Length: 101
Image (cartoon, rainbow, N blue to C red; front, top):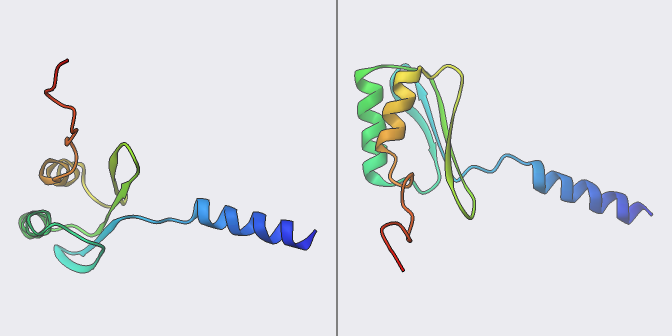
């Protein structure tokens, strides 16, 4: 009986744990922490945006089988969110796009 409870706790932990693919943390326009395999163009673009419009907050990138999603902290302004979304390299890449039968 104890094993079932421990297994349920372990499964719940694995399912609900926050596991982003990439994390970028900014503080007053400076990149303070980065985690994951970040494409070089995306990293330099984010640094340029943060230099031109200084902000504090973090950007997390989640990926599943079908989509890649950007999640921003509440302190990131909406104009900065849009600019980061525009330079993100994985947001519109569908392999079947443009193909017809």
